[in-house]
Image 1 (cartoon, helix red, strand yellow):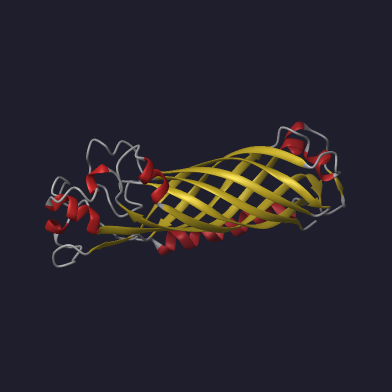
Image 2 (image 1 turned 120 degrees about the horizontal axis):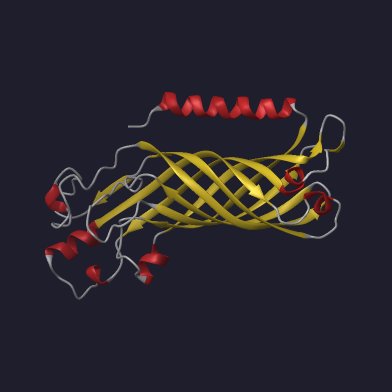
Length: 261
């Protein structure tokens, strides 16, 4: 079940860390992101094109950056070293939702078996609240980008997020109850359906770029890969050999960032 005390502690820790960085004088940026995502889970057939493009959801978020290249307390650039000029810390609170269905040859209309009917009747929803931090690396100078030395600044990032998930499971087969195991695919292990809320850590990696539109604002395009350290984020863990990884997603998000200092 969701540990609300743990989530509250992490949010408080997040705020304290940002306050500490503010006291050090580093400048800050804040922004919003949104875009479509592809949720990869135990729903659907592995490596099937309809599965790959069928379970598409949406994500939104608020992002905060710590910019080491500029000091807010003196309105000046920081000491010129490689880290300050090529790295930022990105903090984020985001939410995503994906409606999940089974795709692939096992649910084709030509299949009339009970298991095919069970799979077609089974749907779910993945809903995740994320909070976390990433370290972003900019191969080109952050100072030069801020000074209009160039309009586009690519980056790569790596970080860790804490995820609070609350999936849903539904079926129209039989009596329509999730608690009735005979309503679901007969080859799955007992207890494979569990839409309970929970939490997990995840690793996050991104490739993207910033495009400067004004002195204090940038447009951001970011492609994220996020891997959860749990296979229950979608509420389904059927323990078949085809399920070789935990749940993960790809998120293409677009954002706007404003420089506060």
